[in-house]
Image 1 (tube, helix red, strand yellow):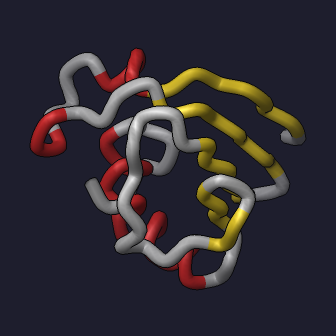
Image 2: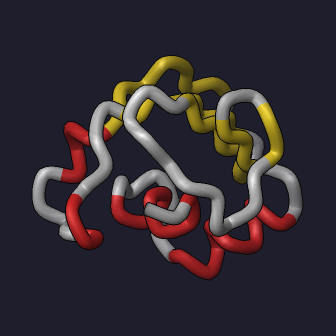
Length: 84
């Protein structure tokens, strides 16, 4: 699944367009490297997002099937949630 779609489906970012622009601005990293919106996400990857003065870092547990919103809560494990 694409990184921007994963951010939306996992509910880390509400809108895919915002996820896309954050990726393009270099505010999203995948395994400690800046990642484009189309970067593939796999289980075990670490995703960091910086938005509105807040940094969220998660490890991908599973990639939801076809963007299904059901069960999105358990698709990632929060490693860090800093800032407000």
